[in-house]
Image (cartoon, rainbow, N blue to C red; front, side, top):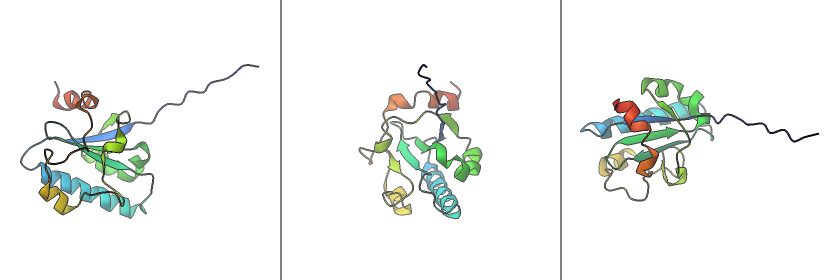
Length: 136
């Protein structure tokens, strides 16, 4: 009788990348609004977590946990989300949903990546994403 190890396959996280440009606040707020609307229509499942981060260059990154894929499938497809491993330091990212989310229309109007402190993912954790999107 031996020990049998069963290795599970980690479910992917998903990431939507919105490049920094003059209209990025509008796109980001539109995405947040769509996320919240879809979440509400699905009955607000507690396990459908979505997080936001800014890169050092001011790009927007939206991370979706694996359990959220059925709820946000159409959004992920429309915004061509990429599959990712779970972000490092996910607890430091800004939640998009739930009572701890500071993201309101006013928040987006008054904040830029340089004004938000302590809520950024380390740059080395996005290295694999940016080149795949930019094609470099």
